[in-house]
Amino acid sequence: MKRNAAFYWKLFISTFYISAFTFGGGYVIIPLLRKKFVEDLKLIEDEEMLDLTAIAQSTPGAVAVNAAVLIGYRLAGAAGVAITILGTVLPPLIILSVISLAYTAFISNVYIKFLLRGMQAGVAAVVIDVAIRMAQDLFKEKKKLPVVVLFAAFILAFFFDVNVILIILSCGLLGGITIMVQKKKNPKKTVQTKINDDNTDAKEEDIQNADATKGETK
Amino acid sequence: MIYLKLFWSFFQVGLFSIGGGYAAMPIIQNQVVDTNGWLSLKEFADVITISQMTPGPVAINSASFVGIRIAGIAGALIATAGCVFPSCCIVLLLGTFYYKYRNLSLMQGILKGLRPAVIALIGSAGFTLAELSLWGDSGMIDNVKGIDFASLGLFLAAFFVLRKWKINPTLVMLGTGIAGLCVFAIAFWL
Image (tube, rainbow over all chains, first blue to last red; front, side):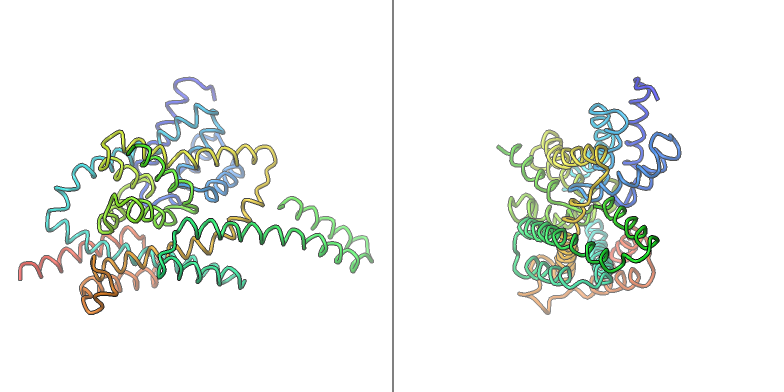
């Protein structure tokens, strides 16, 4: 597709529209972006979109913004990034600014207060439910260290009010060290399996394939 | 310089919220309520509630809301820019890396290490919201018996529904909102 004014407009209006009508955050917006840019506009390959999603989800910041940045960059470079960020950020910016200006009048109404009070009980339940679901997925992996980290981090944050940024930084560091240690251990393991199973050609081929895929995932 | 402060605060929110909207909540609370005192805990809970009902990421919503209250439209723009800036840089860096090597394992490894912390922080934020909803501003410790039974009922009902059937969270919140409106209004008239 040509990078003319119509193209940029299309890019802006697509992200603006998706952002304006997506309730429920990043996990909802990704499938919509995929549908628009992969299926409707056919600008990005399906496989590539999956990788972009992985990057968007594993980078700090709002998933929706991250995905928009990647799509903009992929389709139209720096100008594309500026346009998709604008398209993604403008709807919530406008809506929340209006709400913020009306907030004082809004919140002094006793019935609005009742509605918000009821909703807050629901929000608390939703957030705790999300945390439990994520924790259950983590427990399924049956590794001890993450479980210990989970409970330690929770106790430090909730009962001792330890700074959350400090907790995130130290856990990131711990994760980085764990990966380095695993990387040091891993080569030995592959050597050992090679020594054990060097009888038949077929098996050797399997190992080579396995090594190749390991190399790819690294 | 309030603009610089806003930018720096939401820069940190953008930089340290890893893994979507719920993960941003504890960091927003840290910056907006604990560090700078721009919002009370009650107002913060309102922003979270409003964010769930409006489109857009929680981080951007809070940036707009706090920014405009503290320093007008310019404040909203600056806070939002601060929030978007770090993820923009990191994503572009990783994106360039990806197109060069198609290889993300070290980053994903570090993120794996972060996952339990992120889950714990989301849980902690959830408990903070629950404490606020059930005990109000005074908190649980000073006031264990002061629990609001109507809110407790709504909370338990919402929790039960969410655990039992995977219902859309927005619907659950609307449900507790309408139920709360009825219950509290009846109590108010009596």
